[in-house]
Image 1 (tube, rainbow, N blue to C red):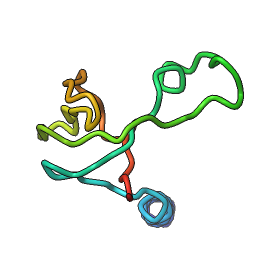
Image 2: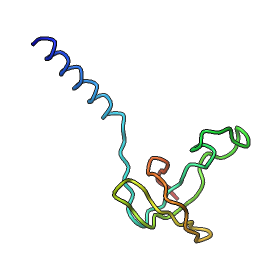
Image 3: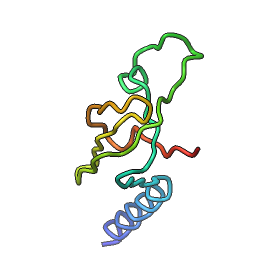
Image 4: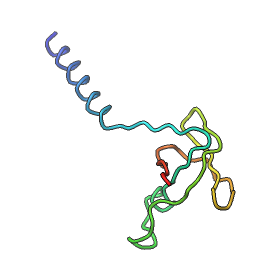
Length: 93
């Protein structure tokens, strides 16, 4: 009984610590975002260590329930492939 109580307390403590470090970001349609460049997402060595890690700005065109976003380039107006929200960050102009 004591071991079960201690295990439940341990799981609760670990869950609280994890939830404090995770920042959920949700973007709305029309928000401006930056996205991680392709070589960072694929975890391959980039052109150089001084190459930019982010590209953009992009505007959010579609928001999917599963956490994927469809982006449109602000400069060229081209639609990009769907991208997971974890690869995006807000763009502040």
